[in-house]
Amino acid sequence: MSMLAGLRVLEIADGLTDFGGRMLAELGADVAVVLPDSCTNRARRLAWHHGKTILSPDDRQAIRKLAVKADVVLDGQRNGDRFGLDEAVSDNTIYVRVSPFSAEGPYAGRPATDLTLFALSGLMHVTGEPNRPPLKFPGQQAYALTGIQAATAALLGLYARRRTGRGQKADLSAFQSATLANYREAIMYEWTGRIGRRHGNLLVRGKSGVRQIWPCKDGYVTWSMIDNPSMMRAVVSVMEEKGAAGELSRIDWENTLVANTPQETIERWEAIIADFFAGHTREELGNWSLKLGWGLSVIYSPEDVRDSEHLKARGLFVTVTDEETGKAVSVPGPLFRSAQTDAPRRTLGKPVPASTFTGWGEQ
Image (tube, rainbow, N blue to C red; front, side, top):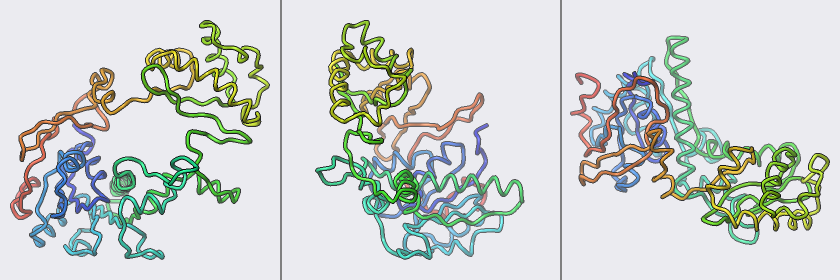
């Protein structure tokens, strides 16, 4: 059985809960989602809503009745409780209300988009090159981060209900969810008074900054020169075998503090490493890292991820059929797998009126 098999979830989606509902569906819950009429992007619906039953928002009374029977309600309404769910949910329901900002904070009631949430959280302030404008991550990461927190709140509520026998109500702020992902800057400011800045392709520690992204023969890898003597010796040993270590062979890594090394020295050492990386493929560098403990990771393109034999063998991707177009597409699938699982639904159907929904038995 799936982890959440038999669990009934009603989701009122408008960006903030979408990924959270998707996570619960992948864990086996039966999720019915009410999408706004404005949600017409087919790619987004396939990515965030496959495996759910999509309901039309037109029947307010039918949606209220579903809320009464739901184990979990993820309520992402931005403009108030237009379905009257606060009164409809039972004392046994896990009711997670998600809004752009906290209900009693200085921004209460204000609108928000993924872009504005990303900016307000400070994540854009530290993303990008120092001499260029701030950047946001691809896609809708602030919304996704909020959805993760919504699913987490729902699971914690279910755990509490199992222990106490009572439902739970939780209010979740998308702004706080995005800010939590930027925890390093907030903690640094609280303890040191320093405000984080954009450093581009540098990881700044102590007096110097070390490079993070490196081109190689067929793409890119991520690795940084840090104060880890065994790791540095492992990298240099292979470079020595290939006759490419240069002055790195003469460094006593046990007694060298990279964070306090002058920047010009760091850059001279990194030039030697850059030449070595540029002469080898991602596979070569990745295999050395796994075998010898380099701490290096290969950077994959979306096509690499989609075609990865490693991920295919583990069943990460599933084929989803868009019933409206008849097209089959590949999207990431279950978060977890167990020895015995029920086969999940892999379709994205046309919206149905809430009054005709029969997934939870007689209405």
